[in-house]
Image (cartoon, helix red, strand yellow):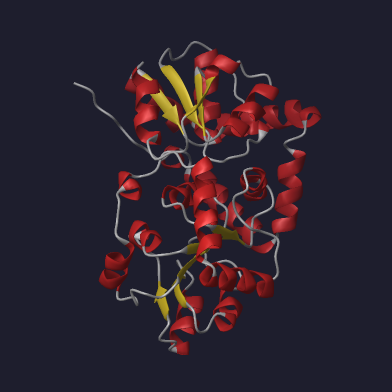
Length: 333
């Protein structure tokens, strides 16, 4: 019988480290994104890797002792990581002979920072051929990199009727619908966009941004459905014709499973900017446009069905609805 244990690696780190790790990142991307972008690019330079890796190894050693004990005590046959922190810890344990489990890491962005290139990994599972090429260029053995796609919950590959889903959600069945979702923080010029698209049926996800939610609700626009943090994103995507979003790896993958044309704004310099570049190379997504240009694009997609259909079709290039099944095959092979 196979048993699977899913854990958050940060729960097995010291409390101060865990708080600093999450809140520090949120502060940088939310308040000083340009500085974060500089740090991201600096740490991706080849000449900087010895300094960066030694520094990370030092503070990981100080703060991840509970995680190390958990991994060693588990005596697992297969270990799968989806974040570079746990990847680095497991890589060190594997290199030093402290574990002998099959070690697989899933890269959860479409571009790859050098921090993902950790010695000791048996298999890298990646989003696209571009992603694979990046890892191979870093020196990873071609045979150790397999394109499976980023895994998404099975509910995102379930076929849903658009009109029926809109009716269930209380939306007008026959109106062109735009989903606006910019992370759990509610980043971006959402209020300005809603003003420019006042007559368009919008579903706006405010996440945990209470001030934004209250401001949007106060507008009382009958064409706009305002939501807080949601757990039915698959239904909202199925009901929509276009999605305006931040280019996070998982959000992109979920949207691609519904063949949604994508418009990006407020991309975080670094990993999200990298995702935009990869998708653009595949003809997917629109970015770096002013609000007026975004509105013009939305109206064009709403007015010309052929243009909308072409935009939907191009998303199939990177859509991998069977990613979970493909990943499982790699884990048990």
